[in-house]
Image (cartoon, rainbow, N blue to C red; front, side, top):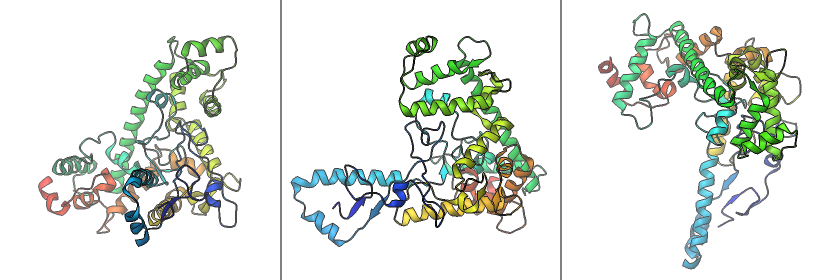
Length: 424
């Protein structure tokens, strides 16, 4: 049976060694060696980098056939249990591997609650790219719904969801002509983005006071470091005492690397003159780089550094669409790869590469990622309308919004044509 469906990964389940491509960590450009994309770490980071989250796919190669079924039937009853456990493990691993590689989700983060609150988040609401360079798959829902996501859950009552969607339509449709123009959608996107900004400010205040025990309005790097190590399971008293005495802290290699990256980011958020003390506003920039032009530049620099393969500090289309580590070598895996390339190519050509010269500079990527950039909001509005604009009149109408509800809300609402008039 192990011959019929084997993991291409050395381990207790057996199977061949990884292919040269996967073993090297990822795929490079044609004619170039594969680029070593770092593997995920338990903290949710990539290669220990704070707040990162690229997850590798397990490489599964199913080879079903009649012999497999016959082999199963010939296994004695006494040997069924181990085979069943083995198959269950493979099925669970296949489910994990089915996650699309080209999107990150806010609902998929690792680590304890305390650690997540202290670490800068990988996912930023209303920002097009994640901290790891993946496309934000929830972006369109975030800028259309804002924080008002109640009523669009998977188990929500369809009639209630349709009615709420039409209420949202009426709010976007400022001139009440029952059509949403690009300008109306742009205004709405900016309004919803501002909501996410305010939410980040409120969360940052809570986290700031949690790491500012003396309440002096400043957080030192040492204060933050103590709280972070406590979230990783260390004794607060022991850590604080060793830091006071200048003694060496014994932490694992991964935690040390995370701390080094966090300290680098701390320096970036610390306005000159640098004193390693962050005010409440600076701490907000530390957690949410989209709130500071300087930190947004730092975030862009990090993303370019991770994706840039030729070291020119710019991104070509092949670099931007280059696949990350590990893919599933079956039809499902091919679909994931195709989706990655298609989505990123469209984003690169239509939105990021502003002058359409085939190269994305840091300035272009910074403008693209700035959530309060009105010009970008207008481009996004036009793109969102184009997705659902079936009658090609450059406006969204109720029937179109209901039909493409999954794009706008994440929920697929059926019977859109029959129900649109009664909802209004």
